[in-house]
Image 1 (cartoon, rainbow over the protein chains, first blue to last red):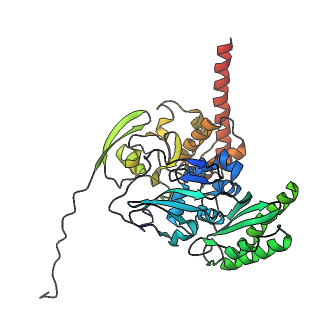
Image 2: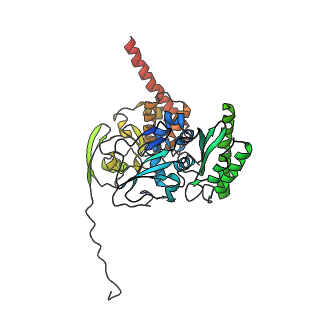
Image 3: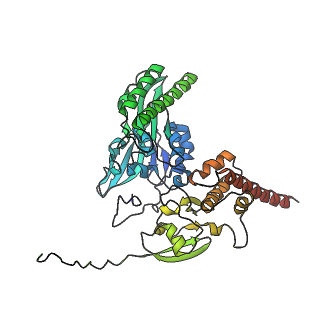
Amino acid sequence: MLKLRFAAPEMLVDINEIQGLDYLERDPDGTIRVGALCRHATLERSTLLAEYQPTMMSAAPLVADPVVRNRGTLVGSLCHADPQGDWASVMMALDGSVVAQGPDGRRTIAVRDLARGPFHNTLAMDEVVVEAVVPPPQGTPEGGYLKLERRVGDFATAGVAVAIDRVANNVVRAGIGLTGVGGSTISADEAATALVGGPLTAETIGNAAELAAGAANPHTDHRGSAEYKRQLVRVFTRRLLSGLMTSGEEAA
Amino acid sequence: MTSLFEEITPSPPDEVPVRKITVTINGDRRSAMVEPRLLLVHLLRQGFKLTGTHIGCDTTNCGACTVLFDGTPIKSCTMLAVQADGHDIMTVEGLAGPSELHAIQEGFKEEHGLQCGFCTPGMMLTSKALLEENPHPSEDEIRWALGGNLCRCTGYQNIVKAVLWAADKLGEGVEAEDTEVMT
């Protein structure tokens, strides 16, 4: 924000030296908590995510580039509210939230309510996000993240996060988040809801991909035309879900 | 306003705040008074005259300004100097003494891992951190690790070869030491 000259604050508070904020932990009920100073690189190398959270595991190595991942954080990415940020899509697909701390205590904000627009979040001036929270899965959590970038570290041309929970091959919860195809990260709720209540089939997947493409609101720019980006959303949604359909059949 | 022109006298600027920081750079503890807005890369280049660290894009993309921060590669154009207070920084000048080459520097020389050389300091420091974490990386692992360091000359082929060369050389050193212990 400073280097983009979007912000020129009189005072900056560096939270990097605060101890105990760099955690990544899983509660007994399956809730995953990511502290404000937990770096992307920690998430990328995490055995906890590898075991329990496939959508986050899939996204972690795709955030920015390896050197930036040593310094950047998931919580910072969410608060930055860049419509091309990867974590907001992932956290929306997972129904994630953040915990904001202010002088009057803490409050929880759903990630879908955190961004007000590009680079604008809904935090009060005296609040800071201390952790991000992923609620416990309602079945077996599955999913992934795909994005197209022109080169490593570039912002996404478009990206899609898919997270589903399945019980006995039936989808009991689904979330789809879209990166870089609107003024804010988009939660493709209609597409996700269409998946719930039955198994993944070619038909439900095709339907969800169409609905997700319809939820996208891309603009033509130097990364591609609006129609091209919409097609990316369609293809990525279908590709991610088709991969899960195959893995579900193998499991069954 | 009574006339069409009235000169405005600018008020004198407020006193610029400065902070004292102490940083370990290439093994030496050094202190400086810095403005809080000063970027780490400017402290290194203009403050400490360590001009081996380059500024390429100034937007966290290219990785030319990569230095090791407590052993981890970071882009020094996107960190404030005050954030380095109390921390350990290694720049390319710290890889080896003035009359010697680190194995990674030797590798870049032997394998022609540079043309213009602008990206090279950042490439070498990211490579150093990689080889410490993974002493025998595959070609794919090297390409993955160097993804945040851009080179416009080489097409990366010889950079990858240079890192492989350095890994072999550093590996030989370890084996030679092991042999000595055994005999």
